[in-house]
Length: 634
Image 1 (cartoon, helix red, strand yellow):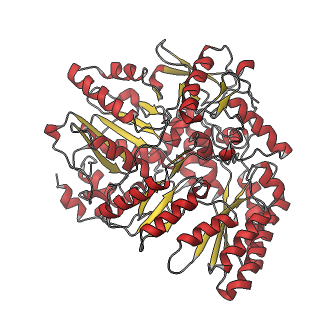
Image 2 (tube, helix red, strand yellow):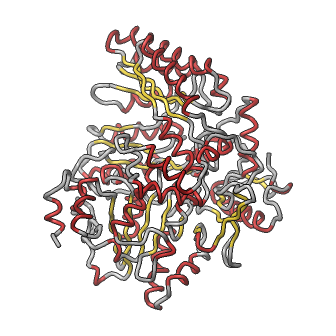
Image 3 (tube, helix red, strand yellow):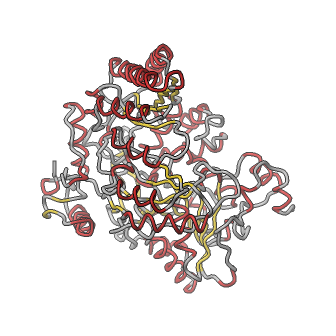
């Protein structure tokens, strides 16, 4: 068998597989009791830009007897070598076969990486199906936003961690240490995970279907398994990651980063992250400045990204920017996510150094009516004011993100996108002349669990095509560039987002057909999935292209993200009436289930909110119908 070093000479970008980067941690296996491999089911270039991986890696490796290492999906050239030479996939730090670890933990951020999960298991020599694993194999655990509908991957993942894992990973490591000392059998290890808050173990649940084949319920098969699993929430943000690994090669986000805020208060009805990461918690400007100081010292970066779902919503963003710019003369500060208003442009302008190129804004819809329907709290005046401010300050380009296929959308709404591009282009020409660039980028709606749009239908490809054609021609006529997503890609994502356990069988078949790196346009093949759905008898259109009844059972009903189903149902009704709810950042509570509970009294801050969330979960478990009168908040 050839050495790993020999394989590295045969592939492009060997630095994806070598390890040894600055700030990486390598421990002696003989001196450590617990061995955990963290996997991101995409290429190293993508996975190393995921802050969640870095945070868990740092937390685990701070414990002396825990060795935490990394692995990623090997690119096609390396996969070919691994399969040809029969070399099991290895960890970057010690080049230990992944199958020798105690735990293999996946981060699930995007449904189109699911076939890569299976590919990593197979390349590691770990049985793909949970039912085929023995005590010799690591426990396969997954977390991240994909875990909020775990069912499509439940045949392949032993346990799902739901919510924030900073504390949970240490609890897991403590369990592993005890299991190894006691020689605990595999099934008993899984059973003991049932007692851990925020953990879902699929082996102890069974799906029930009606005579028509439609999903009816997911039921525990043992008294120890909770009927509802409530996500874990940290009362406050943990210390910032200040010793991140510095890759040898350029990654997607090749800069230092500080998470300045977790959660979002805007309440966009299509946005899953805005629902599942509530409540909002912030870092102080002083904490961010101190983290930036340590990051610069530990990494050598001269660029800092302030991460948040909506960075300029931070209540102290101006003092934070002022402190950063006054403390660091040469630091470039990036704001990746902003509101669509002139204030956000002012903030972006305050941190811009050197040439100003493209500012990104996300109006999401082309008409005020539709923006109200999706609760995107931005007006045309906001957008045009932001464009005026940006071009006037010397920016030469504006990129605007929109969605198509939104509920209640008409061709007039689509034309509104073109009209918006035309107006912004005119503003740009007024200030920077021929250098003005306007780019319109659209994505297709993918209904996501735990959002008001979880009941929405997705437009078919035939319905989306004329909208894309109208936008392409219209944007060309007004001098704006246009890009769009392939409807076939969005269709598969929707099926994986809302699928039940039977969709997992299609994931397996698609992978056997050759599906992998589906998130990369050059590798995505719709025919792999079409054949898979046909083989296993899954009606994919039933999951994607119909409007779901708001009282039908959902495959993710056993997962409690904290926002109540009744609140989501009320928000879905408001789509039709275009009634909006205000941003709850400034004390206006919308009674979503996180910030206060009518049945329990108002919450006082995040700590009380978290406590009440636990009490609410108890009420739900004890109620005959957890959508009953006591919990009907809307």
